[in-house]
Image (cartoon, rainbow, N blue to C red; front, side):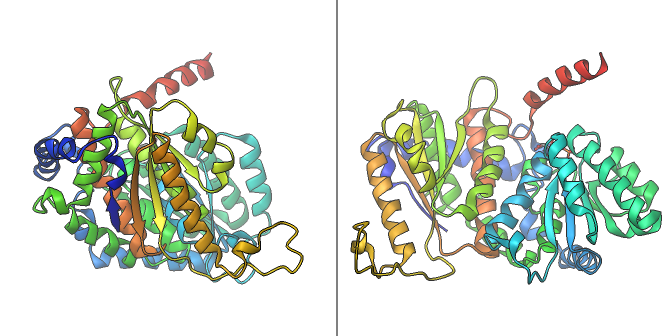
Length: 430
Ligand code: PA5
């Protein structure tokens, strides 16, 4: 992974970034020494290097068993119990994997991430006559969205396969000993995986919360963890500020925030990264948006959104900065055909690869946005694969921890998410 902050220096000088170095280093040390707020939720810091091979083998074995039993695996969860797995699976999958007929692995379908009656009804309708299994992911087991969806899916599986068949086909990922899901799983004899006590939902993608669905979808979880472990080393507290990408990213975004750049837009030029941005938005939004502070995390898929939000980014209120997630190499090659008639006037791109055109769009966009007053941070990976996805995941987690401490908030709680629930429960009980 490469990080460049060259295109923020029109807005924030190198000296202003250097001035933040002591604070960044202090915050990084707080994460490692566990001396900051929320220090009982820092299990993710050394998670990649501490996952044992037997842990990974156990997850892989459960995934292989599900693949034997089912063609469709419904993964039920919300928030931190959903977004990580979805982001990795979408990044690594064939863009049209749901339409591909020669699937070697089960199709993972996500549910319980909303309370839409139509979504869930249509899911049950789609499952009819297919070989299915389910993974329910909930630390508490009382979250309403996955809770009611699980009731429906459990009943559906039990009706088809009976209690014994359901026991084989349902896996729970939940708390080690507490919570309703732990009780349900033990009572029903489901295979269980543990969400560590000291890892919060949005930092849990490298636990069974993310690893099990990713393994079921057929991706190499060892490589994912390896990529994260290498980034754990690269962002360790012993690595100097200048060489530590997590420190530089945290410093850059806080320096921009201090200059009134309150919105960070994560931009990709590859639709496979759409869900990765959704995961990133939860990570930063839920970690930093507190006590009236925090950068608002937004995202765009380019070039698609250059034909919509591009106008605002170029010309609207100047409170934005952009972080572009670049993928150096595409998986496949396609060349634009030459057309004798040239009615569309596009022969100037004939014989060029689509990726070459996409890269020119990316460079042109960055230049235009920086000129228009939108500072740019550039993050680049060689290609989308398990290793590089793991690398990015840990990079963003580490930067998020540092960045939250720089803001002076607890990046590891989420008191604000309770307010809507209180109102909803009051209304439901009336
Ligand atoms: O990040 C978080 O803590 C939240 O998004 C939770 O993961 C989410 O609310 C789901 O909670 P649970 O796993 O208890 O169902």
